Image 1 (cartoon, rainbow, N blue to C red):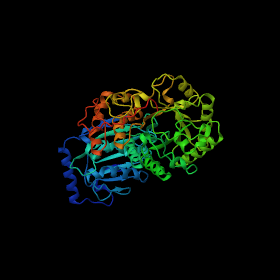
Image 2 (cartoon, rainbow, N blue to C red; image 1 turned 90 degrees about the vertical axis):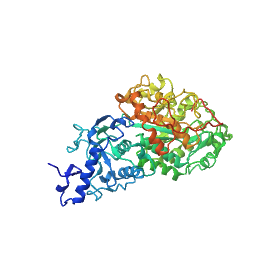
Image 3 (cartoon, one colour; image 1 turned 60 degrees about the vertical axis):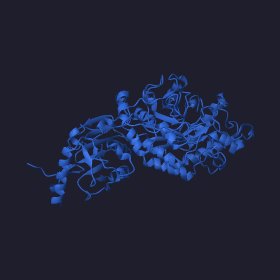
Image 4 (tube, rainbow, N blue to C red; image 1 turned 120 degrees about the vertical axis):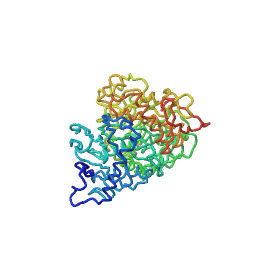
Length: 572
């Protein structure tokens, strides 16, 4: 006997003729029946449920439960998740051409197919009416975890927070055909593979760094990098805002920092800087995508641009010439002058006030001319200045000998996993962000003939970027002391957004998987197959990437041409 067609509701699927105050019209019943018949005859979704990058914690496919997005699909959402629903609709509308209205009340009149974003408790059992459920409670998914259920009648994301909903929405985006990332309508069957996913991150800190000091990148470029991070569930953007070649953030109390210090860059270009309004825009854009901005003011070294602007900060008070090369370790603020600490207090105070996130990065690397007690004394005082703003100190692992500050995080960029000094700092209470230079420094060349980048830490193809474990990488450092992973991109030789993307992709998703996915899911053979399917997505989105021969790409992208001003550096 034929059954009455059903529509999804918050508690499951309700037959149309049982919804209070509603009787389905004959045309609506005929439309639903035709759709169901079409689904039965349609081929399976072109993407498999397990093709997601980074790999989810648990995947339970149901090949009989594919969902097809149509022109009358609507998105229904609880109020706190509305912004995520709006972003999901923004991703899906251009290629589908569908209106995808959003409602947080009763079902809209657009038809019975609904994508439901819900913030119901994670301990709630899976939808009993669907063909696939997640057995038992999933209440331990934390602030970023989510559950995804796909049935023929709808797609449902459940999470405890908007961040979890957002990560689930990114997974849904990946489960559509690759053409979903295009900017114009495409004739396509927009099918999502059926089944369920339960997912949460391994590490709380997963990030990338963009060096805007060596070469300046305008706000729009930074926003695009934020989108790249969010696509792969990375949740921190570290901005290297100051260095010898340029000072990139306006400081009202020291205006010449941006006006004078921001006017240079590697190679003699015009440089640039962000106004405080620019910086707020970046921070707000990132926050909407659940990405936390981590600003870095590099001290006491890497300060030539600041010394050009304010020579009274320099040892001997002698103004240095502007610097547009790539050497390191020659500049420093005077650690014996109280004027230096007034400068640090003002700058850190203003940047902290502009930054809602908990972290403030002090740099601390390669201050070769500030040695011993002068260095540790400066760092310890600077750490107290950061703490007075309410922020937590992050610094490169050269900070390790200095006295511990509560909550301090060291970012380790070494190439040898045996580092007793850093391990000792961990024993004193420090946590670590792992950025091994020979694994995740994204300014390293892929191969010897890569047209841009360096090789001082070695050549890093996508396999090498993927094939290590942050939880066991450093001798004497337990996994519980590892806060997460970060992939830095230094820009001595990187000058354009296309070059940034070429160095990020495909290695950025590899690092994202190390930070997000359980160690048990790490498998190079499986990862390279999943990664291959993202090449067409990047092409559709206009993202430049390196066609690594390690990956069986469906098609080859364009490679940036060789430049004649190939610069190199052997350190930060």
